Amino acid sequence: MATAIEFQHVKKAFNGKTVILDLNLKIKQGEFFVLVGTSGSGKTTSLKMINRLESLTAGKILVNDQDSSQIPVRTLRWDMGYVLQQIALFPTMTVAQNIAVIPEMKGTTKKEISATIDELLNEVGLDPKVYRDRMPSELSGGEQQRIGILRALAAQPSIVLMDEPFSALDPLSRQQLQDLVLRLHERYHNTIVFVTHDMNEALKLGHRIGIMRTGELLQVDTPQQIAQHPANEFVREFFGASLAQNVYDIYLGRVGLVQGYLPTAPTVAAERIQTVDYQDTLRTGFSALASHDYLAVNESGQLQGYLDRQTVMTYLSEHEND
Image 1 (spheres, rainbow, N blue to C red):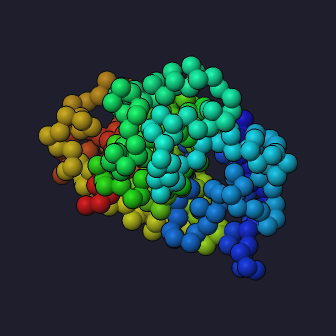
Image 2: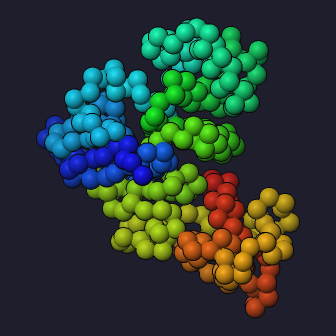
Image 3: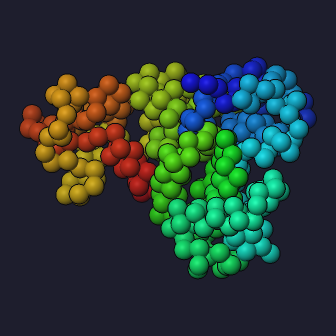
């Protein structure tokens, strides 16, 4: 798979203090890549260097195999959507006008822009007849962030940068927007670089996850591989901070619910099912899901039911604030 973004020995210093030490990273085209870490880890600074909101102190960032420093800033940013934690809609513009900003700047025809606005609003469950002419002040926080996401996607950018876009929202809105972004990514196949401090969110969204600490990239891998082979104790503890501590926590959260919990055997080959004990750690469950499609949960030697990867991810996202 081709590389969309590549950091080559990137360093960043503020007032003589180095905050990004020596960042080397490749992000694939069409990948949903999540940078996660504690406050001050350098994840947001790394994101902002991609679209040159922050300059590099040393090294190079390639965007679609071109040195980003050699690409005119406007050209670079026109092909990148950007979604912030602070909902940054233009307050004096309607919903439609907000979504149309970049397509208009790029010279897209009014007819195409109008069709795109209707299509995108319908995609996120907002009736264009109702929402097109509303002002940002008339929208809820979740609705405003939906419009912010649509504005980032309206010009069909190949890359979308998201800087903790859901952290200020209530848990329900946050879960809904996570699902929305996953659905939009599946439809448009753009490259998404998503920054969060929340490991549960990273586990739900990321094809791969990069874990940062004090300016260093400690590990880059799939959620399953990070669970199975944490690079060091910090990664192990950061991953282990997920609220579900063992398979049984997730099993209890799903018993009796239609979605996710499977009371009978799934119709797959036996070798695609791994048996686990209800007291096994979450890390053990993730490790098993790296090479199997389902977990068969046993308690005292008796089969209780089945869990799949999506069930585990969904449980974590729904219970992150419990």
